[in-house]
Image (cartoon, one colour):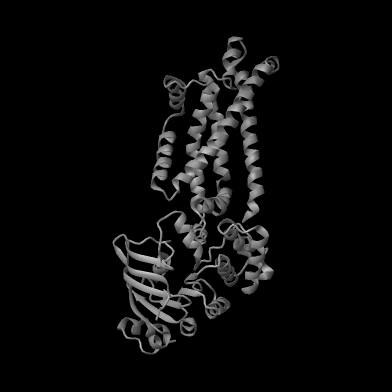
Length: 214
Length: 247
């Protein structure tokens, strides 16, 4: 118990670091995932190829390898950014591939007739997707997107290995200070639980709120 | 017959894989004309209907609406589709929007009308199909016949030059078929250009200017309903009619 009260600010910083990573990477993942899902169902062949390659590369690369590629690779090409930004980029891009596939499966649950009706009225691809298909797909993708973002929150722990301040990384300092390793990790786990349960709660609310649409 | 052609198909061919579903189709629909397409299942009549607004692409041939060849995918195609309304067998009303919003949506997004203006027009059209009181319901709360009438109102909201009907009554209970056919009869009387794929022979007899009989991807007969129903020329049409008119 002492380990928490005596190191409140250390835990606090780590916790906030993880929250920041999760929030920024989630936003990036949702935006990119949305764009890539649109690409994957677009009538233009080259866009579909971009979407498919994006998903294939990012979904099939181990996240740690992706961190190495971004944090050590990009500076070689002259792109130097704070490590936290690099971590958000790596996490966000990686997760966007999963978001993309969740959205696409949601799009596939909407009967093709809905899109055909919209197109037959003269609506463009973007209008059809934005006004007819995605609002209906939205409801069925809430649970898988929630799971993906929870996975993102936990994956953010990898950033700690690249000297980004986050929750798991606090164990190194605490360990050196001689605290019990078990209690150190218990409180770290509680920190992650707070974040992941908050995400679950948020998505439960979304599901209830939008559940009435149909 | 067709002095002023609105829809023109010339030598249209389409394949699904190796299946040759449309074979050298030639069809002209004049302005104000009502053409009913009938034929056995799998004869390609629905596909024919869907090629006219390019919901199905074709492998070869030429399709023109009001003298303009059907554009490729993109803005031009969207503009053309706005001019050609379509009514589907499965209604395809937007499930997440109210009846009123269903009719107004494309007016707002495609015709760029103001919301009040669009809603007012929608209410007029709903009144016309006898559903003014249902404006605030969701499609799932309506019967099939009511949904199909909303779908007709939605298509009319774009002020189309022509309407395509792809088996509009095939998914309906028998007692709901008439309410939809009455709306279609009224449109036909008002001079709307219509291509109707249907199994309703009564409608074909009473409302059509021409009947097109299709079988195995070909147009077999293209005549007035009077002629077709009393003196079918081809064996295929005789066989078809004997089967459906027997009972």
